[in-house]
View 1 (cartoon, one colour):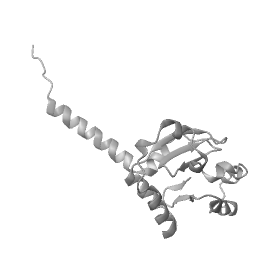
View 2 (cartoon, one colour; view 1 turned 180 degrees about the horizontal axis):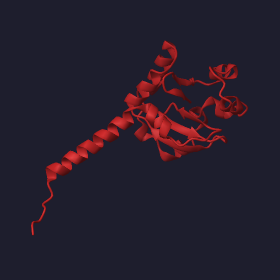
View 3 (spheres, one colour; view 1 turned 60 degrees about the horizontal axis):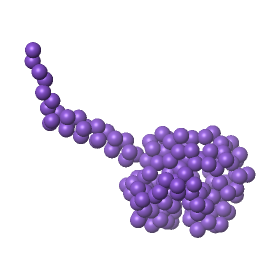
View 4 (tube, helix red, strand yellow; view 1 turned 180 degrees about the vertical axis):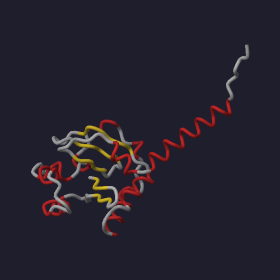
Length: 160
């Protein structure tokens, strides 16, 4: 009878391959956004703290993901105007999502919530899939210190 001895190098190779697979999956923020739980009446929003939150129709957080700097800068690159890109890059340049506490993730303060969560009448308009920016949404951006944007990815569909 021959005994098989574990090969530490073989195990290391498997571990490296597994980690590379996870890393490459995590690097695409669009995949992270798509994999987050969602509510048909809710929305997904990246807060000023760099946390992607999925909200239900009542404004409660139902899922989240922590983005790293590369992912946040990629998302900032999706902005429509150079001003929005610069704003988001400056906003997120020093963000470390690993330092964000669980209670802030699940119950974010008002300044981290999406503007539309404060204006419930916008939910039906968003749910009905109106294309482009909503006129009422543009006015809301001025009410907040932080600006929000809609993300449009032409080849892969709309992400909100």
